[in-house]
Length: 384
Image (cartoon, rainbow, N blue to C red):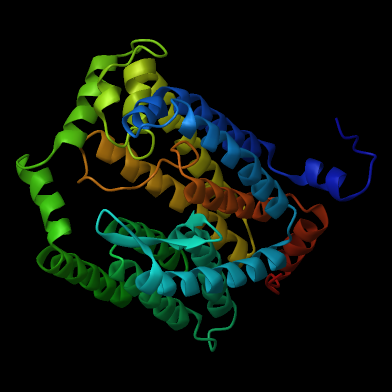
């Protein structure tokens, strides 16, 4: 245990970090590692690999991911902003390269190989995009003559175009939802709400008419006809698990779910540990989002407020999409369950998001006292 009397970076970090957030992130990573034992062996066996191939790889990703999360949590808000700008530039550059030299997986160009390591740049783009847009919204709120809102719209247009080009409609919808939520918090005018809602509806119509795989997934979801094997099997696994599950290692339906270790790990959890266990997972994500929004509500600094709200919304909406697909409430979409599904890029990127949240929600007594004094006097709160 670190004493309050100690001084230094580690001691300061320990006594200023939001330990509820930290414990929640570590808990989700532990649940994901536990579920990898249940979900990944059948997939490895079908591919002719060692039964615990994906379990071992999941374990390998855990330590660097945890190190990334803790390391980023030491940053100040100003350093978070700078790191996000660098990360956003690098990830957008790689997203452009993906279109030319990327690896095609299931008809989409989303992966790029660097030094033998496959990376999905769009995963790292998401937290950086949220932080940079939060900064732009905050600068416009502080100085209306700065076109922060317009720049964020242009940035969103670039990101959306690159995602659609891959194509990755799910990530596009997720990014649009988070960006729209932040824009609303920043005081989006009603005219913009109408314009953007119309643009979203138009974009959805164009995607349905121009992208056959999008139309196919929506049609299968609406009619139940066609190749619905994976979602139907996932639903059967959930039903078979009932309230308290079949027990660890006793799942049978999970063995025929193609992506049981990634997109459908929630169904595996339901079959082996039951619906009650899945409800606990949902409550953990709900706690994370609600605590983050509570932090944002109490935050006086616009940048911190927008960034924290956007980052927890990103995790919350992504988990909702994944769980909704597992429950057949949404069309099938390849999107991981944050910190639980197998996937190196996804896990490291979510830990970047978690690190940003931890860094921006750290308790800084001197800074808070100054902000409260300035706020009471009507001077305003200076940006970090």
